[in-house]
Image (tube, rainbow, N blue to C red):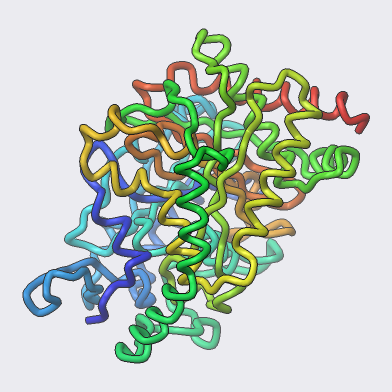
Length: 453
């Protein structure tokens, strides 16, 4: 039994029926040309035979007197794969609309904590000779970057290669089979040094907020910043990466700046249509991965993430000006993290990720100002086409975690020359969520026109 890190345990503490704390992905595959009518069913049967499950996917959370009330990981030796791996089918011919409706329902259901924290749903019957795979994994088990790396590692680079399912042990490829162990006295000493050195930066951050000199101090309250329910609504679509890169070059920003500007334009139009656009600019929390800093492999799991706040400039009508403000805001945020250790970044980010703390006390959601208005993540994915036993991965769309006070989460994954947007929202708080897809497209087009791309 290994004690859970604070970065992982924080995703267990606020979880309840209205607020499941898992992330997921929707993968759409093109069947092989020679696939018969039972191809998907046969794949499901073969997967159930892969009972050699890697340790990461045998972990379940526990806490007891032995752990002094702290969360720890227990490792299950007997995995009920028929519970974790499930076969579903859409009424043929299943449209994307029905697929997204099914995934919306599945994503709103919490994962059973008495078992390892993951599920996989194999979905047959999608029109166009396609099928889908929806996976969900608790955020305490891994973060988005780790999840994408595991998925990419589980798929093949050519259609002639067969691969085992992502939960299966891969001798010679798994870099770790057990939860990482640490020297507790050494870790505590280093943590104390890191946090002591963080003092001036944290004090400056709090002073800026108190004096109102921080542009992100008091974001406006919007219909995005309400208590949520347990029902989800999900929408997804991809855009050519080359098109986004062209806008970034012409506008003097990065691809991530353009992604944020697309989201700003979409949310601005969405709120305006509902007569709910505030005069003050919205602020997004943008997670940043610390994996490169920690040099960790995907097999260890866990969370290594910080946060930057970004001014989305939704008060500006000119898309080129919005992009300029977003680029400047992100540059300032990145500069504030330069030179800090991962623990220092996590501690500083905790000030900005207060919704995870306030969401534990649901009545506070309507009483305190939101520290940001929505979450926008951008996760690098496989650069080249991937295959599942000959089936081509045609689309890879992320799902994430809305929380109390943050009813919309936008996550983007790059895959095979495309930027795949996944919008996860509270069903009650955000009517007609799918309209944001059209607004994203319009936002990219108006950006291209404004910067001359």
